[in-house]
Image (tube, rainbow, N blue to C red; front, side, top):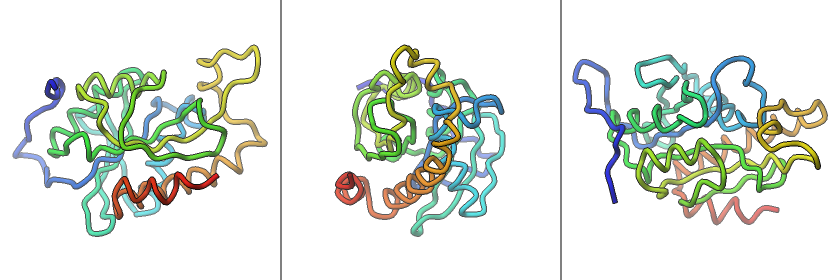
Length: 207
C-alpha cells in the first residue's frame, strides 16, 4: 500500500496538537453551492461546529477547519475549500499535519444510491461514482477510511445526475434536509464516541 502522497510535515510554529479524529464534510466552496445536494456533507460539519461553539477558519490547507472536543477526544472539523473533485488536495495534508491516519478520518457526503433522507455508516469502501470520494481514495492511497453517507435519492427521469447534485433541494424537501443534517451530526458524534462498528450496528438498522 502506498503512502500519503500529499501529506505534509508538522510545522512546529503552528498549534499542531494531535487530534483523535478528522471529520470531513464534502462539498463545493462558495455561496452558489451552499444549499445544493452535493453540499449536504459540508452542512453537517458546519452544524457540528455551530453545535459545539467552534469556528471554521481559512488556513493554508485549502480548507476551513476548527477543533472541538467530543467524548473526551480532540476532533478536527474540515470543510475543504477545493472543488469536490480535488478534495484530497485539502484533506490529506490536514490529516498529515495532525498525524491522523486514514482509519480515523470520517468523511460525510451525499449519496445518490441511498433514498432521500436515509443515512448509512460504512467502515470503508469504494467511491461509488462520487468524485470527492474518488479524489480522497486516490490521495490517501487507500479506501480504508470510514464514512457517513447521506441519501439524496436518484434524479427524476431525464435529469442528468451531475445537474441533479448541483441543484438546490426543493422547497418541499428543505424541512427534511434540516432534520437529516441534525441526524447525521448525531451519528458523527456516535462514531467518535463509540466507534465505527457500534455506530453501524445502531444506525444502519434503521429503515
